[in-house]
Every structure is written in structure tokens, then in C-alpha cells.
Image 1: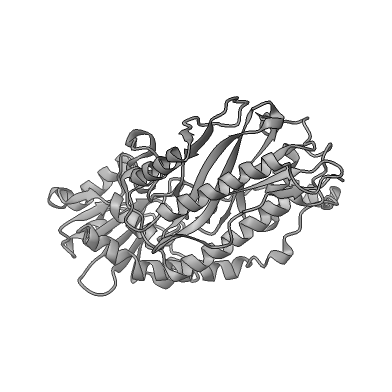
Image 2: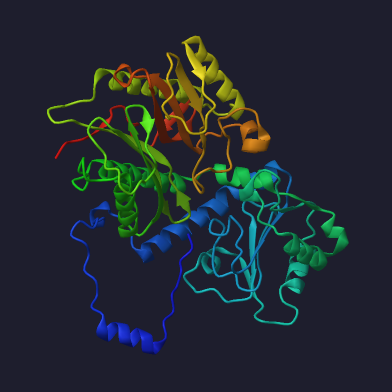
Length: 467
């Protein structure tokens, strides 16, 4: 997350302070005070502990697995590397380098080169073994990069370049030129892609990461449930856009970033997303695809609700049965997600069993658009999760690297975080045969025998009462 600082002149700030009263919160403004989200100082301590543990326990195995004895991550102000926060963060300034060296011990050596001295409470000051602050000098970072490499004489130097993995492709062409010029041709010939190192470093989850992500999953599920079913949701008045606004407001109240898409299905048709003037009505199915951004982590989850008509106490049987198919599919999906399984092979294994049960493959990117037909359909699009919504680990999808990256050919790793994501399309008789594409997405961790939920998966539709 990036923060934006708005600077006002002294005169304008004084005028605003003296003439404009502070706005009062709206009567229905969300209040997240009882979620138990830590404040700024505690978040800083949590982040430092996580990064320290990660660099100490996950990095060296990733480096050695790919025969890389030095890893160099370069970034600068306004152009951070995708892993900037995970390896220490801080103010990059003119140019900065995070250098990790395997000297044969039990932990990697951690060197930071930067133009600006970092505050005492930062990860860099507390965790890194060597810090060099070169200021606004004429020679800049160049001699320090040269010394860091030449003094340690690495055999293979990993840098963040990748054709298909954006998380591992942070090194710009110009910055690579700076690096090559600094270290000289002998060491430049030893540069290799660190893309698989980055993959393994992220996927080797630590105890502190796992516990934090469990908490983030709990917050996300509560946030989504309250956003769909809270007293602010009034059938006949509340629109999907209103609900999306509530989700964002609550995330802000929690001190987090967020994304949210609210979809409304009405008698088999997907209504325009976040339409300004279409309130939800009884009989609608309302689903949110959303996530919270907390520290260097992001969640991604769906929750689905049915809008009750006056006198109704549950959805119609046809809707309940369609949702039951989604829940049953989640059990099949979970059973195939075992360590070592390959992304596209998981996809084919699930599809093969589903086809034996009578499903047909759905390859549309936006289902639930008034399709009519007797077939029951299935589509799979699960993905890695954790530091990004669509992270660097295995992707459950067809074997199309151009579309999905090499992730479809990656194996699952025990302990990695994933989003189990799919939909099943089921004809609904009351909708004249139009299908409901019941979307399903849950956050889980890869266990030894399949997926393990951080929290219980959604098995029953949420209910939005008439008011």
C-alpha cells in the first residue's frame, strides 16, 4: 500500500482550520473498533518480527535450492521492487540495494545499501547485519555495490528478472545497467534470474506469517458477512454500489486497504456491477468478491447471500441445491490440493471427476449472464495467495503459460496459502432454465492431505432479511 500525503500551505491550512468545522461521521459510518486490529506501533513490531523470521528461516533454503549464493534486490524511490516490504521496506531514496549472501553458515548475511539513514525502529536498522548510507554523494551506490560483490566473490548472483512472474521481475533495464557497470564483466556473467528463489521464499511460510494470515482471514470473513447482511442493507433501497461503499468505509475504519466487487444475480441475469440506481430486491443473490490489505499481506475471499422475500425463512429449494453443488465441489477440489501436485494437473484431475459426474467445462471469464441450458457447468481458477491477491505459487488452471505464467506448472508446497476459487453453473427452474453460476472462493493452507481452512468454509447461504 502506498500512502499519499497532501501538503497544504500554512495559510490555507490555517484558513481551513479556522473557517471549516470538522466533519462529523455519518450516522451509519462503520465502526471497526471491536475487531481488535493493532495500532501503528504494534503493527511495526509485528512486521519487524515477521521479516526477521522470514529472512532467517526461509531465505537460505530458497537460495540453496536454486544454487544462488548471492541475491541482490535493487529499487529506488517511486519505483520499489515488488518484494520491497517483505525484505525490509524503508525509504529507498536515490538507489538502494538489499543484498543477501550465503557464506556457508546457518543464516544469510544481510547487507543494505541506501542513500538515507533509516530510523531506529525500522526493519533495516534492527535486522540487517551491515548498513551503508552513502548520502547524496557524487559516486552514489556504485562503489558500495562493487565492494559488496567483490569482497564476497559469489559464484551465482540472483537478480529479479522473470518473463512470466511479475513478483520476481522488479529489476529495470536501467538499474541492471547500473549493477553491471558497478560489478564489472566478470561478475556480470554470473547474473542469473532469481525467479524460483523468489517463488520459494514467498511460499515457505513461517509460523508468524501463518498466524497473521489466519487473523486476516478471520477479519475478512467477518467484514464480508457484515457487509452483506448488516442493518445498512435494506432491500428495495440499498444498491450494490452502496454495499461496495460500506466495504471500503469499514476497511478504512480498520486502517486497511481493500478491494471489493459486489455482484447481484436476478433471475439468472447478472446486473450491471455497482449500478447507481438498481437496489437489491427479494429473490436476488448478492455475492461479494473482496479482500483486505494489511501490512504486506492481502486476502481474497467470496461470500454469498440470498435476499429473502417477506415471509420467507430460507432460499427456494432449487437455490439451496445449487449451492450444495458448490459446497460438494469444494470438497473434491480440496482433496486434490496436496503437496507436490502440479497446478494444471490438479485442474485436469478435478475436471475429469466432475465430467464423470455429468458436468461440462465452462471457459467463460464472466459467467452468470443469462445462459439457458440443461447442462451443469464447472470452471476452476484457483490461485496462490498471501502477499498478492494472485501470488507467485501454483495456479489451478489449464496448461497455458502465456495466459497464466509458469505458475500452472509449479508444484504445491505444504504450508503455502491458496485461494480455492471456482464456480458451478446450475439451471434454476424458477428462472425459466437460466443458470446460476454459484461462485465460491475460500482461503486455505496446503496441508499434507489437502486443503485446511484457516476458518470454516461457507456451507450455507447468508440471508438478507426484508426490512
